[in-house]
Image 1: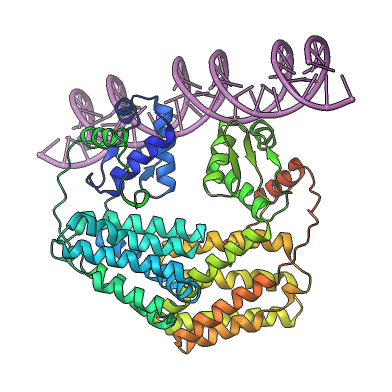
Image 2: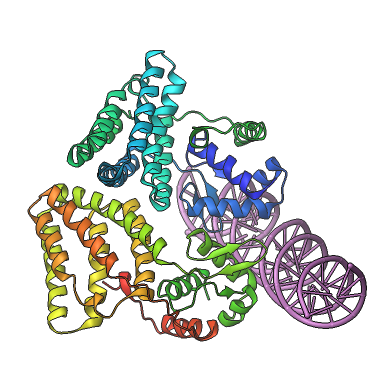
Length: 236
Length: 236
DNA sequence: CAGCCATGTTTTGTGCACAATATGAGAATT
DNA sequence: AATTCTCATATTGTGCACAAAACATGGCTG
């Protein structure tokens, strides 16, 4: 078991929000689950702490975070700032080929929505933003955008409303149209509006998904990993 | 010697660009310099690698990077994207008190420039951008902005032109005026223009500052650290 | 003489044992 | 009965020793 794999599995578990907040992740416990030495897990946990996916407390260990809606607001605000900048940049720099690629993506979203394919639509919907970051061609922007988007996915999993996730395709289309028309101001505004709307769709559902054991969740994701399933960004 | 201190000292040395690129930083060597165990240094080195301030090669060790102007372009582009988003946000959200704070900063810059106080002006000039990030009140944006700005400081140290660093105060003032007037579009444009101009001031000076030994540079910065000197952002 | 393999040396990676610190229970005291 | 102190236990942090990998040197072969 490579260190990179452990990191990937834990990252996916954490971003999926499948564990309740404030849960302690013991080094020894995880080491047993993964079947590796404690040091291996230890290093990964500290790295996840640096990436702000875990709360590391000295001499106490690693704890899952419980992002509340207030922190969620910070993430969405950061996204509005970064992605409106991205929109401004893209409006001025997109090539025709890139515009075409965007168009196809938005169409695929609409198609999935029309077919009632909720899973596909939800995936494409997230990937729209990853795609925009990719089209900037700037690795630094991509990394930052990916981090922020991942963090909102964690929030959405926790606070999504059944109704909420069933709209918003028009907003992506509006962003696309502004970008394709190279209208910078309009693109910025469309992006800002869209992200604000997405944020308002989060509902303060206080019900912590009463988590299954750490062992269950991690082993499940581990099996999925070893089966070669690669969700989200890497797939598209 | 705390792990945090070692990280701070090395970060400052690297960002100051006082070491030539591609230089190897041996674990044992650094451990001797700092007078700590190898594991301590090791951990810091890996962390710096994750922060992209060092090039970590498996089984080979840590190497200083030699950012060329092409990578510099990527950093400045990322800054244009992020900071233009910041400008758009600030134009809509600055409080009168914050505007006043910005005004004072820009005035201080002008004052330092008038007095010919090159050192102070250069410091204030960098801090202007840190200040903008701070005024967003968003910790995620702050972290990202700080990383990008630090990276450009590394570039400036390496490729600065004597003439280049002696202008640009007017550009900050233009940004301030647009923000104070809450003119979003104008603020975005002023920011983009400014960062583009700064980038063009970098000159492809091929002369690697023929570095003094790792030991000399690190021990010097270490002494400075222990004397309590805290440069740049923390000072402001 | 050039290229290549082998061996010795140096440097990094990993597991282990022990030390330091936090947690929780239980007893003693007010 | 509540609080605090102490001690037992569990968990994390750290240094050390060994393993593994890369590098350098020198000799061998074509």
